Amino acid sequence: MDEYLTPDGRDFIPGSDPLSFRRHMDEHFYRHLNSQLAPPVEHRIFPHPLALSRVPEIIARLGGCDACFGGVGITGHVAFNDPPEPGEKLSLEEFRNLSTRVVRLSRETRLINSVTACRGNIDRIPPLAVTVGMKEILESRKVRLYLNRTWQAAIVRKILSGPVTPAVPGSLLQDHPDVRFVLTDYVAALPEPELK
Image 1 (tube, rainbow, N blue to C red):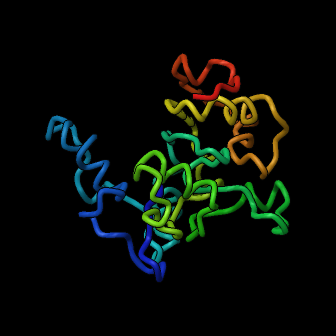
Image 2 (cartoon, rainbow, N blue to C red; image 1 turned 180 degrees about the horizontal axis):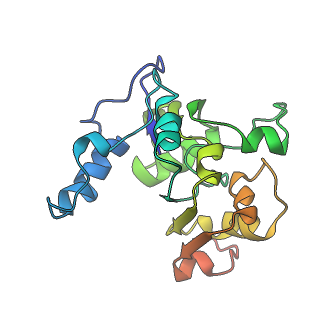
């Protein structure tokens, strides 16, 4: 659904980079599939910053997307659809219709990703990424989101029970006809404060 980009925003980070989602999918998913069941390499599609219309065109040509699988970020983002920045005005309908695009990641997203993937080295997290839009996600026939980080305990409550708003992008899924959230016990636990 998304990938980090080079500083000029014109290409993916190298596949050899440990932060590459393409690399992660190869190492932790495709490599473990029976070769006769694995999707062919040409069907493993990531949005590209120089061909933003490619993913929406493929989805349209195939009659829509059957399923969208993903997670949720600390801002409530799905894929890299972060909330509008302060002062950026986007109506609910405008946010709903955002398509595949290059994005500048929010500081919150870069920070939590640095904690998760770089031991806190925020400078190592690229500021730019390419992502499928809320439009493509919301038009998927099924959406399945998996939450397994302790810090997701608060945001999942806003997504599921708060108002539907671009300020919490995942909240737009409240209106989806077939969405499921899969949570670990510690994500489902109340987000009570605790100094460690």
